[in-house]
Length: 68
Image (tube, one colour):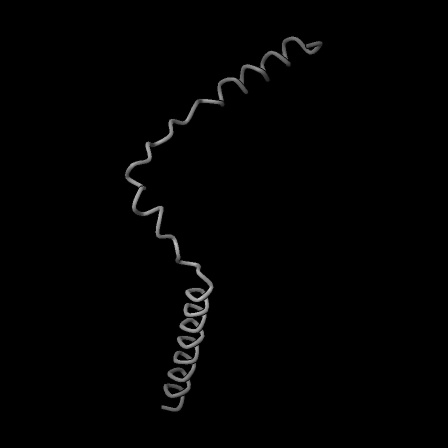
C-alpha cells in the first residue's frame, strides 16, 4: 500500500514539472504564431523536382570518363 502512495506522489510531481514547463513555454511565446494558420490554405504545395536522376547520371559519367 505504501508503494501506491509513493507512485502517486511521484506522478503528481512529474505532472507539476510538465505543467510548469508548459506555462514557461507559453510565457516565452513558443505558441504565438497567429499569422501562419490563417494563410496556410492559400499557399500552394511546392513540387519536388527529381534531383536524383542527375546525380546518378553524373556519377555514371565519372566512372566511364574519369578525366572529366
